[in-house]
Image 1 (cartoon, rainbow, N blue to C red):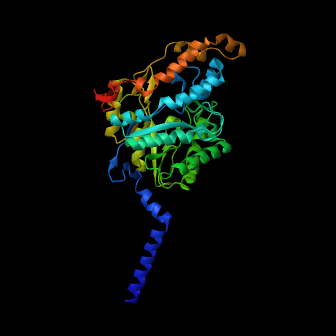
Image 2: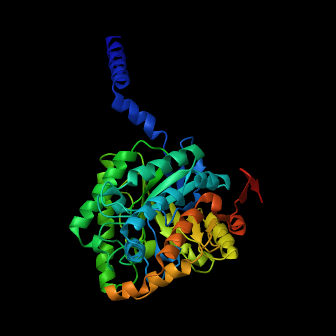
Image 3: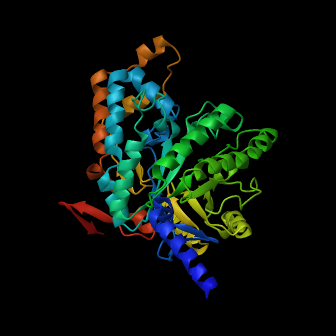
Amino acid sequence: MFKNLFSILIWAGILLLASCNPAIKQETVTTSKFIKVDGPNLITPDGQKFFIRGTNLGNWLNPEGYMFGFKRTSSARLIDNAFREMVGPDFTDQFWKQFKDNYVTREDIRYIQKIGMNTIRIPFHYKLFTSEDYLGLTENQDGFQRLDSLVTWCRESSIYLILDMHDAPGGQTGDNIDDSYGYPWLMTSELSQQKFIEIWRKIAEHYKDEPVILGYDLLNEPIATFFTEEERVKLNAALEPLYKRAVAAIREVDKNHIVLLGGAQWNGNFRVFRDSKFDDKMMYTCHRYWCDTLQANIQDFVSFRDSVNLPIYMGETGENKDEWIAAWTRLMERNNIGWTYWPFKRMGNPSSVMNIERPENWDKVVEFCDGPRSSYDEIRKARPDQELAKKAMLNLLENCKFSKCKVNESYIKAMGLKPYVFLRDTFVVH
């Protein structure tokens, strides 16, 4: 009798302690709100299987040259330099602020939900979380303000969000994709690795209790294919240890969110991974473009997924004809591979959800940005009429607004979704 009474008192004390300790209570409440990993599947808080269907908000927080119609001027740093040479630093600073204000808004997120998508992948530049010069700001970067707004819009529309570090300190690819200097210095520089880890820790600390965020995509397309076999072996060997260090730092502040690991060579090589169990909230992300829509072209991802018994999803794909999009979507869904197509918006190209109209006189901007500018004399001679160039840039700011974009209906249908067009303050299904 006394033994049973003693046990009851102990359990009563434990329950009382839990009810009085906010940390214990918070852990119980928060962990139940997040997407979870269960073998090869993702599971919602209410226990249902979750299949990712979505898009990438490319070019918003990490401008890429080809999205502007440029070839030579291919990365954010090069675009910014070209604009400053063309129209001056003050106008360029104002352009970038308005670009960030206009390119993605609450209306865009509502539309993404309206057509049937459930997830957004948001590529971002690491400089948004530093005091380095980026997109018109030289200090007090606005990364958290921009992402906080996006989180609010996604919460309102019941859309999950994947945070993707597209451009890492030192560069992780060695090409224009990461706004780097031609080599993946992140893989060899301890200082860059420390900065990479610190930024992810800071982001995780900020969003640790936010259930709208599905997970953290730690590195976009690490280690390009351009290097020698000997270099690739060395660089590839550094990838998983770096991931482990970053995840350890994230777990110091955030035990709720999934971490997403991309393979080497454009998120295509998963043979570099040796330890699939170093974290209990982990999944993988692959990318593939411009191939046949055959099982053979996705089988390497399926085989890897099955070997580690963890989810894998197609973080980027697309930029192809509607017929390809339709067949590729069916192929991914048959293989239980969720997807976020690239990109949501694009100028003058139907391989996106929304099409941005090319501004008048934009060809003069392209001519300057892609022309010879290796000396100050060449810059002066190539500079276009200021009023025409500035007007073209202002028109782009206007054209990229949701209300001014054109819906690519056949592209949306190819993904198995319902295209809506915006008419007189209401959506109409087509």
